[in-house]
Length: 85
Image 1 (cartoon, rainbow, N blue to C red):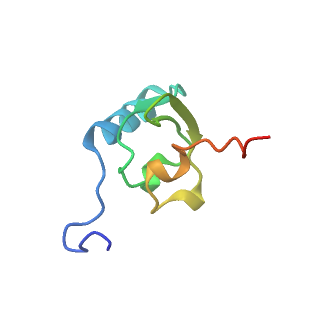
Image 2: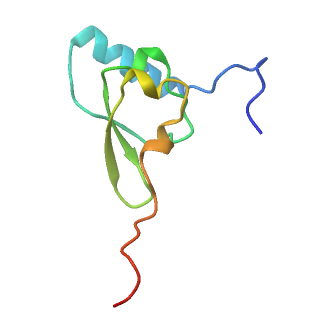
Image 3: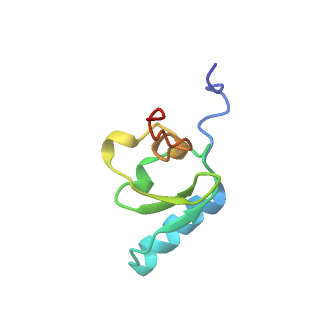
């Protein structure tokens, strides 16, 4: 079940604030975040994010096709190493 249209998309204000600050300064450093449920909005396009997977941070560069998805969808939490030999 999706989020109510009345509420609008969930965007973490801390992450949005960091993106706006980067746009003002022109910095291209990765934005470190634990907010996997944060929706990707058009303001995030062209920015690097380091998304926490529960164990380490996974780097993601946001493109136009990712708008509307959540940050956690692009940082997988499970590593499949194949079946035993």
